[in-house]
Image (cartoon, rainbow, N blue to C red; front, side, top):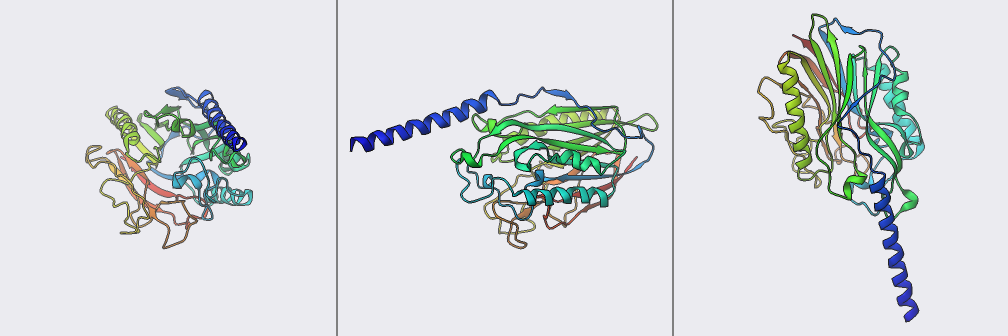
Length: 361
């Protein structure tokens, strides 16, 4: 009996030491980005001044190549400790298939600007494939910028399955443009999760790119990815307050402002369960407040097509919960001509692309 008690006590002490070591290592290696970081072009564009008044944009969360239709991600069920039989990392063949879909997309869908989120630069989850460079290769003559928002030498979750640990991650926002911006800056968004959750989460940011427009104006293009797993919406509210001030200040200066990304919230008045009414599978999604910006600013999206599917289980059309959280925002001096969600049946990511054409007034 004493031996059994000693064994139990020893096991508990060993478990406690392991958890403490994980938390200490995560805290000591937690990336602390600067509030503002100048981004360097990894590839330069041939054109430096926007002479066209009609421009095309695409926004798409690429899901780091690991969240195609076959994926059921363990963390979407909210469990830090066990995978419960769900996917931690997709098989390499699936990652290669998904990244191949990304590159095929930019080959077949021309645009002046591509705003991508959750793009891996180097990570265990994507088997060291440089997703950012793979897309860049298909866009010769485009400027390319990488704004990191997830940098960790080792993400140790699920904590009690260390042999499956998520591992090293370097990931972020990727922006590709047919024009060379005069400046590109990464802005850290405010707010953070309480410890210890924050050591496993992304450091949310916005990539801001300024372009000279013929006639003397500037186009301020923003690539954004707001917080997920934010049940109360408090983090998103802090981030949105920061973004609101920034957008209004830039427009007040006379600039064109165009924003695209994964907002992790629905546009004003959009019913989060529109595509699955009454069958949300336990999910909910907050809306951007209707009075967030003056009425002459416009939220641009295709209301007929979902842009996000939940990844608790593999994608099954008609069963998986789907919603719309990826879209654009344009300032009053920009007119939307067309917007279209591009239906891929979530083959390559848990998100779908949105294409937009605008006129600079």
